[in-house]
Amino acid sequence: MKCSQCGAEEAFAFKCSYCGLYFCGEHRLPENHACTAYAYALPPRQYTSTSQAHTTFTTGNWPAPMSRQELTSFVIGAALVWLVGVSMMLGLSSAPYVLLVNSLLFVISFLGHEYAHKVAAHRHGLWAEFRLNGFGALLTALSVILPIKFVAPGAVVLDGYGDGKTLGKVAAWGPLVNIAMSTIMFPLVYLVWYGIYVWPAFYVSSFIAVFNLIPVAILDGKKVFDWNRGVWVALFVISLSYLAVAWLLPL
Image (tube, rainbow, N blue to C red; front, side, top):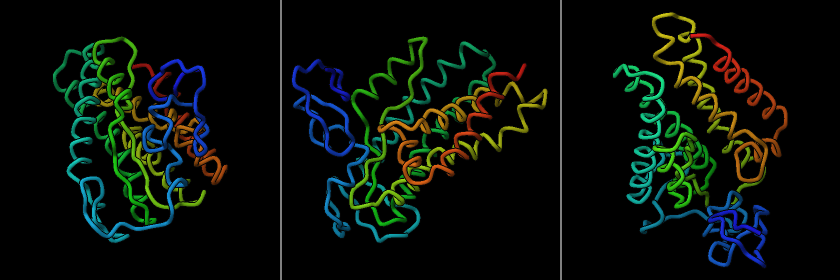
């Protein structure tokens, strides 16, 4: 059986009691595989001191505080996503303006999605930080030169206790930001002058929402589905409709 984190073959893999996936000995602990259900592994608590890993905060403050480590992770992740965006656009258009606008919108789609998770978690009393995932960052970097694109250099990790409703709401905010971006761009893709400039970003933003709403354990969709199926259906149908428009729209 393969480790869900690094892909190593394991004769006797360890099953995580929280997310239900299987891992090698190195990644068996929740904190070593960016466990999507990590909050359940920890007792209820709220951080009140600053350390290398954790940032002092009071629930509800705006903006959600960010440690130096997290800021570095966001910068590296954004840079990788930007390079993937540039590599995608080089195959679609040679116009510098089209390349610049869309690659920047790709980065905004990624940052907006992840930061929305962080803000939502923060407002519900959970500590949350974006952390790079070594395997995901490597695949994202390889996507710059490979024809198949992968954009998942890391994820927001939660700490503290959150019930199903709280975790569902936190998970929903990431795709919701992408849906909001697609909604803003939707009218523009029908205008002859602007359509070519925003269509790739419209497609990518819609794809990020649809992909993350797939209801499997490691994605946002599972937590949203478990919390409120009506909300999940609404978000999935809207994002899937936008993605269908992106596929079918002749430009």
